[in-house]
Picture 1 (cartoon, rainbow, N blue to C red):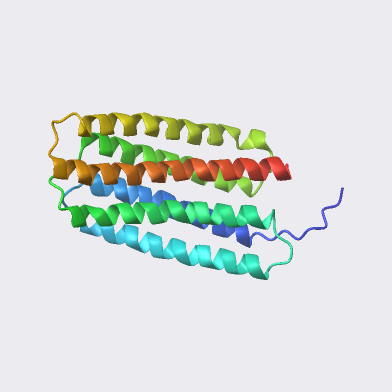
Picture 2: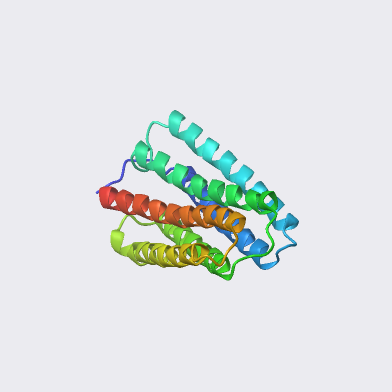
Length: 207
């Protein structure tokens, strides 16, 4: 069968660019928490990543508005772009709270979540890169399974961290600070699963 659809690769360039910003943001967050309290350089890098991701997202949505034939359904493109951008936005919002909250140190369980977020964003990025050359679920399934697995571990870590916060050994003000930080990083990990679900829907519809 002859494929009469034009091979527009620009959208895939934009998807992959957004996924790279997600990975870079997560990596700088991990470096930031491991180098605490020396956080300024990584905080600024995360801010730069957020600005760059916003620009790519705007470019992608503008192109979506102006393009007649797209690689797959417009609503799926919109959701994929938004999901990737949301991961970066969430990491940026989280990082901003470190100086705002005047933290005394970093909880070990938060470092574990930061490590996990990096792993989840890398799995997302690898899955996004495969989308360019394949619409077969079998060729993305290992990465989609990995993303779901990371999210499940993140849930377990989150529950354990909150259990510790509420066991009475942590000062009330610190509980408030860390509860919010844990929720933010949990949301970022959940965002990776959301993107994985979007990718799964795309390949099922277009395979």
